[in-house]
Length: 254
Image (cartoon, rainbow, N blue to C red; front, side, top):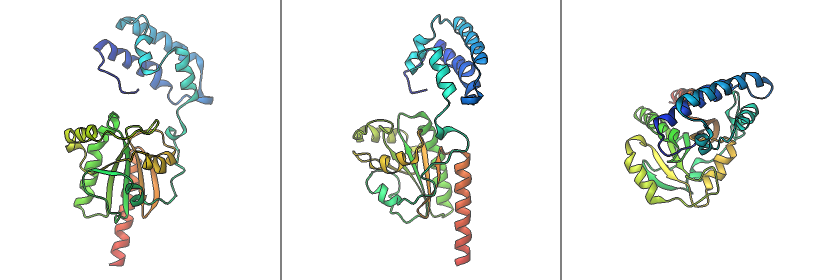
């Protein structure tokens, strides 16, 4: 769900009921795996739970999240998630070459080490300050950058901020972003850039990935894109394998 103002305890209970009764049990039941009967039963259970919480019309709250009816929920679940969130998806950018230095040269520097394009391993992270998962990912990426920097590995972690990444590109409010980063400095201990007013990095890299979520990391090894997606387990596995391979190559050349 999208960011929203603070919720009351009752509203949080209703959101929890929606998530556990109507959403999570059907997330992998899309397309030819869909059956109407289990969903109809879940609707009845949810209606009863909503009444218990104190909502005769749960859509008074759910509409704030652009959830308008049981039929719209059914249609969305039956359709399934975007391809990029399905198991086995691989970005069309994987296997393609990009120049991280050229991309980042169009961005403004906000925080952390300046990127000079010398590292063989580059992690580009697309994020926005209003995105809770992005803010939560900051400390993990900071620890990642610290870990490899202390080991002397040839790697750069670069966060590219674009507050309008899902819509029409708007110029960044540098003062607001600076205040955010100052308040969250401990969570962003790596290079932070801001996309330019035309959204160059967004158009050249993020949109080309076909991934439609943030945070989105693009792992570039020697100019070759090897991973696109969330900064989670598979990303770390791919990164660790790349670092190990480069270490072995370096040892052989020594």
